[in-house]
Amino acid sequence: MKNVREFLFQPKLNQTIVSLEESATLAINQIASERRSAGESIVHFGFGESPFPIAEDIQVALRDSAGRKQYLPTKGLPALCAQFVQYYNALYQTSLLEEQIFIGPGSKQLIFNVLFLLEGSVIIPAPSWVSYLPQATILNKKVITPQTTAESKYKLTANQLDQICEEYADEQLTLIINSPNNPTGSVYTQSELIALTDVCREHAVVLISDEIYALFDFNDNFASPAEFYPEGTIVSSGLSKGFSAGGYRLGVMGLPKHMTVLANALSTLISETYSCVAAPVQYAALAAYLPSKKQQRYVTLCMELHRHAADYLYKRFTAVGLTCIQPEGAFYLFPDFSPYRSKLLGNNIDGAEQLCARLLEVHGVAALPGSAFYMPEHSLTVRIASVDYNGATALEALISSQELDDKFTHEYMPNLVLGADRIELFVQSL
Ligand SMILES: Cc1ncc(COP(=O)(O)O)c(C=O)c1O
Image (cartoon, rainbow, N blue to C red; front, top):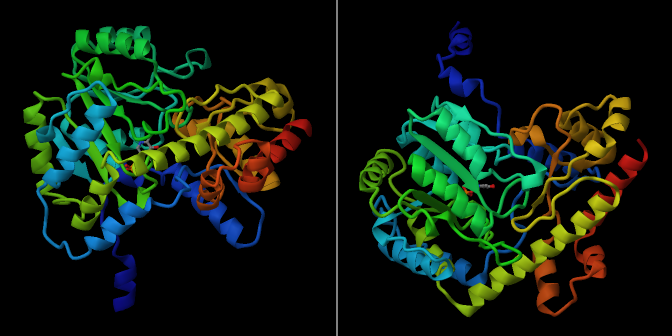
């Protein structure tokens, strides 16, 4: 009798969350890993995790801090906030203030927290990173997803933003942009940012600038909108990509100087939820944001490998007739299989979900459909993460001054070659 009662007891749950699916990136990672463990040859273009080992200095700092057991201030370790501000303001033309910095368990959580605190609708350009929309949904927010085009390299234009602001003139709006971009690899230029932030200023739009990939900017083009719109830009950053430390769970957020009410509310929210980020991790992060030559070199070498991988795949994809914008940063490509639309239709594929299912089932290539990034159902865009290689050996080879050429790709990034070969065979077989 007791067991039956235990079995029947299902608490009532928040249906908004129950109806959400697991994050698409984590789900594809699970499938690809399971199939790999079962011995199948899978090229994993699905998951965007930095492949490099964490720099030795950061690892040493973490080990040395294992005894740090105190709770830290909700906003973060003061020395880390100060060091981040110094590091960031020296790189970009910005004037973030130490008092307005927050350290959180990943930038994902910090973005969620500010979305929670901000009133009004959220503008999330399509395509955008998979988690923004579910976060807004969890918070019962209205979401506006303007469709961008390949012509603008999938970047939101000032005109598009202006139209939305006119339409929603009565409410506060929050815009999230991400540059360098996941899933497209695009980087907003200075003039694009100036035009966008002019519109933001005119309509008092709160701008969340997700800069988690800022250190992987291939053409030295990255600028922060906080340079042009300091009063309304919330900067979001962290250790996960530039320092290859996703699992450390350390994100950084910089609020505008005068948004003190938001800062106080964020502090209260943190104090009543996770309290603070693990102390040893915060001490380790001090080593990341030290403006040392060693750290700079590490980031530059990782960036060069990302650029090389992106250039290789870009060449291969365009050579077989896929439409693709050339990545300018991060570690993703966003090829469009539209040139093969009628042939794909002939093979019962009329959207990227079916396309990705076929690529995985028949060709052993895991990739994510554009629809996971809010592209329309029939779009044939696919997100490719270009990090399926052994980062440690690739980094060592580059340090021992191996040339970054095709030979390097074949030797140190063989799965990128294999994946491109399989995609080529697939389109040729249509
Ligand atoms: C665009 C974008 N923003 C934020 C994040 C989350 O980063 P974090 O590890 O700091 O939570 C990711 C991770 O994949 C991302 O791609």
